[in-house]
Length: 395
Image 1: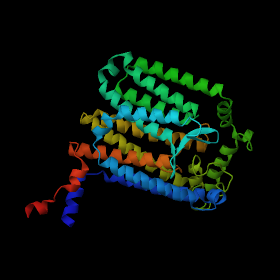
Image 2: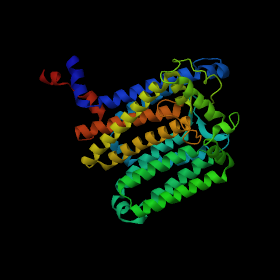
Image 3: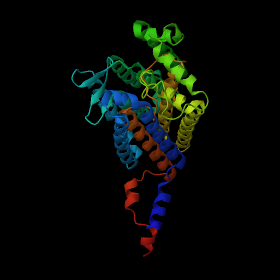
């Protein structure tokens, strides 16, 4: 039995560093969700660990989904990417229909599935990266040699972004747009087309901010939150106080003062501020280093895929790494006051079932890609699990 287990482990070739980083970040997230949500959970639901329990349910679903993804060849995602983005667009339409979409704080971003609320934007981020990576491979020559090559994905991107803005969810739109532009640049879109597209999207984004008073107010507030510390600047000032209280080594896990109804969304958008208050600058820096190491490792595997001429796998990995990096940067930037307030979760850390499930799926797909790059062929892991050991063959 021992020899059989060793044979299986030596055959699978999972990247131990990637696995350790994913597991560490997920467990770290559970700890921070538990610590940051105790007071609000007790007040709203009379259960101190209400949000932790729901996060654990999401993690269980995420682990099951991740295991299924590990058993599936990467080619499955390439072959079905168009169907997946179509289903994601259908979900974006459904979430806008009254009675189906769940409205929270004026935004219709969730569909209730009983055990948890599905945040459609998280699914869209994942599926759009799948779709765009597949398209850039299928239309490689057109993408690299003509201005028309990016019209089709741009049309799809515009459709997705428009539906997201109707929720409204500008944060998710920004993440998808930046990730898509990065992938197009890596794929070799003509530079002139890329510059024109980037400038056009920047202009449209600026116009959207200017036309919505609350977005313009957020832009003004983050430059000087102390001008109205009990009004429009309340979130940011409370977040900055959390950083100030944490100093270098923090006030201790579970001892945050700001999470006690001072800091809005302490277990979601502003969980990084609670982390800095309880664990100090040292704890926050360690977390950032873990995240940077993970992103760097994914980029490294992506370059390995390029060397093996596995472009779909490479684009997927570049897309996932960019997505995690951009979303984490925006979330942390909002918390420390260098970006205007935007409702985006901190990957792996913030409370949110949809985000955690999708991140587990991303983690599994990264591991699957790395596995296939090492074995050089898309073998199903189920085949490995059912394969007789060498010791049995000898008998």
